[in-house]
Image 1 (tube, chains in turn purple, yellow):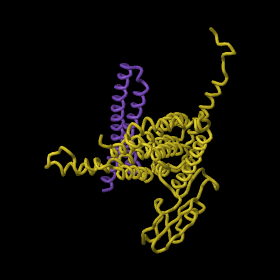
Image 2 (cartoon, helix red, strand yellow; image 1 turned 180 degrees about the vertical axis):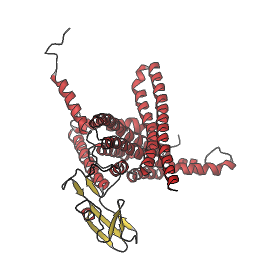
Image 3 (tube, chains in turn yellow, red; image 1 turned 90 degrees about the horizontal axis):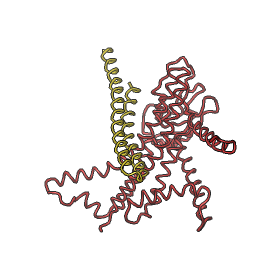
Length: 81
Length: 342
């Protein structure tokens, strides 16, 4: 029974690791798309660069919060296990 | 064209030195080292201990390094009890029970678990909140005095430093979102912004408490926004929630339910966003520093410090952005609820 208990805990830690990786992929995809659209928009209209940059930074922060949420949960799993 | 000695301005070098020195201020994230170094470092506990609230404020090891904050507990059985939290710790820093109270996982409980204890202690976060409040009062009294003194003239001193920020919040965040009577909500939103911004920055200094990353603090801020949006809701606002126009009758109950739940998801999202952003930033930095303790090598120390410096800079940005986002969403919700009929 002890071995099955240890097996469960190791699955939990593995899940946490895979989760952290997926979170990074999600954040990368999201912020990459924002960055891409921002680059395109600045290329179309260079004089609006300041406003576009400001909006991009704010939306990147919102996406980053979602990513960090997943990261915190994965860290909690790996620390509690 | 060669650079002559006259063109070389020493003040640029000085500026670079000042800025680098400023950044080294933030490189000092403190981690409580175990007394026996051979012992296995429990990374999880150490990191969580630095992010959570505590009854003592530990600055550095040694006799004078810990600030023992007062414990104020009230229970039905024992009444009100006020004592220093140093009573809970003996010389070897083990937790001992005192006077029928026990410190279990950071919570004060009655020995024998016999009843409910109302813990009103001045903990690390409460003390940090007091410091933040005093700081805000000092800064903004100085700004207000500046406006009195410079009546009709150009701003000077700290007034000139904060005026662009205040005007930016008023003109780019509050006015576009709140169409009707925005002056009424301006004090609240400005206070919200500066409380969160300066609170975030204070949390990044060495040895600081994780104030704005405490879910209780963000919950209170979100509750303030919730109360202000709903008390000032117009008839049209409440009408849209409980009697959405243009919806066929069978779907109406479902939509009313969804709208009612939507009333609460907005402050909950505000609360969780700020809490996660700040706490996760602290956990990432603490994890990188704890790596040094795990590997116990100089090379890891150098690499980790550089990465932590970089992430600290990002955290400075996040401090400002999260304050801005919280204020912007609060202004948006207030604006949505106070929308007048044209």
